[in-house]
Length: 633
Image 1: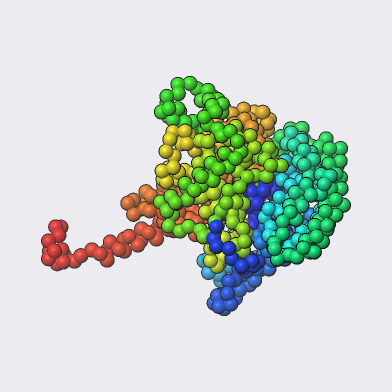
Image 2: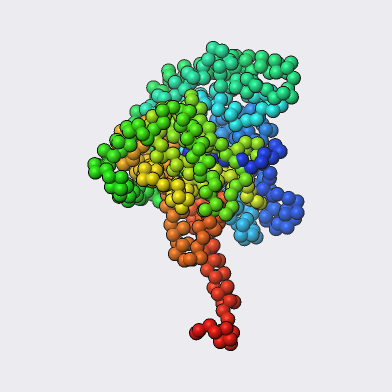
């Protein structure tokens, strides 16, 4: 069930967690409510077989357990029942959750799969797969890595941007969380201290970014804290006396609970943790490191590919894309080398905006240009809207170009496409189209919002997914700019190839560092030699891969599968192939492993071919009819 929690928290959507993030978009707002249970109605429940009723009761119970055990994630989904508490990250709670996963898996296996419908057999298989992987992952002790340079307790104040503050209780719940903050900090430090002892640590080169992030949280005036943001405005329905009480409570909680906790973290981090961090990069240094990396490579890609096979696939993709880049260089009349062309793109001011405000306005205009063209490649579009907003300034220097955050499950918050406005002189215009297609529509927002709007599927599928599907779809969506007529100049097309190259390079550098023991500079140099992205972006990207082994492999592996299956369907169906129907079909089951996606596509192709054969046979006139109508034999 952990994968249901993680993706979207997915960088790209996503908050980068150390273990298998799968995700980390405006329908009309709906009434606030907890996400509905897997069994959507009593009528439907009565039609299920006994085995199916047991299965869905298990799904519903596990969904409730997952939300209760992960209250901050429940808050992100719009479920406010646990808004007054943080996740319990104590070692004791972590071990109890593992025991619960083992027990849940045993109970699942007691259900007779043969007595289930095909749809429920798929639900069973996916739940079993995720549960087995969660159980298997536990031995690598990734929970001892509770923070890195991209997220952790030092960025917890970002949660306020995803919450609703409409009632007195909403504010009181946030104050309760502030008062409980020292307990969460103690648990975090305890995990980190155990990580030092067990040598489960991130490299020093990325962790040296964290002290500055902690410093930004330590303020003398509570009203300057990010945790205080909700108390700067109140709904008119809250009386003045209540506002005064809540403001006073918030100030006190921040001053007496939050600030001392951050000062304690800073002292521990600088004095003990950072000096203990690893001197080299790569998961191979961790206990069982090579085995662990093979595990996450399989889990993220949902394939049996080995790190070496992925590395070789990356090399071949880099060579192919370089050839396409060369053709565009010739088209624009550039006669130098790739490196010289990249340098021109990185330094020519015509390709950059002068201010963060101009850059944000351009991103917003870009999405407005894309939206009306979606009907060219889709028949079904999501009801849920999305917005474009800046990445918070306190983390912008240390994070990537953009990411996406899924909508609230209750319809109270749209999907959010976050864009990085830090150093606009390093954010090229020619990349913005491909980036927006990936993060917003037809990429993450369209796919994830449609998944959340699906009918009777279990919540672990509705709000979870698989990185290879989600990020593979995002990268595939960039190529749809051709179908939609959006790459209307050579440089924007080069931007799309740059982004495709970026994901191909990932296959090489991720496996290079974590499996083949490349050092960080070798990975940076390989990236610089093959992509036109700015050096600042490339360094942040490499550091992201260092702190999230294997996740970056999913994009290109998934995209290649989508393209392979589209080409297969087009060949099989010929002039009857409609890309809109293909897209609607691949998204109608939500995010699934790539092997399941392939089975779905093959079944759809066979169904279409059978229908065509049947229609041709039934429409064929008799010999007499042909003669009567003058049709020649």
